[in-house]
Length: 304
Ligand SMILES: Nc1ncnc2c1ncn2[C@@H]1O[C@H](COP(=O)(O)OP(=O)(O)OP(=O)(O)O)[C@@H](O)[C@H]1O
Ligand SMILES: [Mg+2]
Image (cartoon, rainbow, N blue to C red; front, side, top):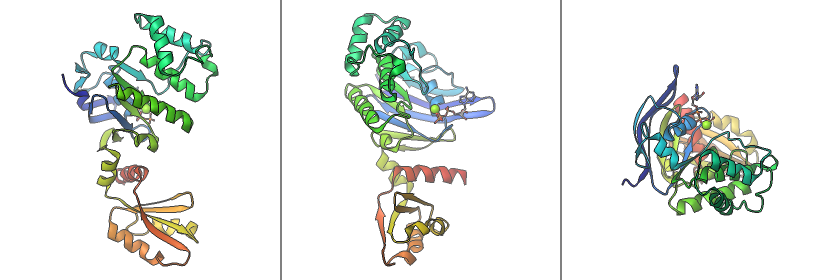
């Protein structure tokens, strides 16, 4: 048996003349949590749908959980939990009733015990009688995760599971994901949140249907070649426009009251900042490059 839960190469999908996914390779070791990032429309959902056998690829080969992802989708589905980007429930059924219904639809054996165990695992016991329609966003996500965990899958494909959920609920959700990973379950999770990317073992960044960066967050940041300086203090609000257009500056943006200025050519960036150093009341210092800066830079590079 391979140590890879997902091992696919050359994934491609077109819709009419639109290329949605183009030559995507993904290899995820069992038990790891990988983040899938990229702008809207870059091909994340389409890739995930191909991985779990819901969409036929135009090209590509490989395996999910050891099964050929093109021909053995039934076996893959049996061991994969897929949380769709826009899931829905029966709003006038309770949490427990929703789970029982899903268990019945999938003809799972030992339904009552399974539902009880899943309610317990995901901390839903106290709320089991609450109607799904009356749940807050965070609890809805939890119910959705419970529903895709009922059949005890080995692989979880989560498509923006925390979109629109408050920070505490996102944190709780991620604690659950890490607990699942500790039990050996492999997770591929798409997200637009940088803090969530940082919780992943590795990330894959897709842009215009192609993977253009991958690795640990530290590796992706290091490979970008960016340097960031932060400017704070008197008059900094007036500097954005002039610095944005200065040679050597690739990115400039405010984070609170601090102006972050980044570039790939360190000496050109330092030259651009030299006139501001030593200005009374203005502080200029180097700071760690953020993942968000890297993604925005990659996006601009491809579009320019
Ligand atoms: N069924 C479909 N028919 C036609 N075009 C589609 C279909 N599904 C996706 N697309 C197109 O394929 C491209 C990739 O879409 P996809 O939904 O995979 O992106 P995404 O990365 O998941 O975006 P988001 O972050 O907004 O969820 C988009 O241009 C989208 O409009
Ligand atoms: Mg999507």
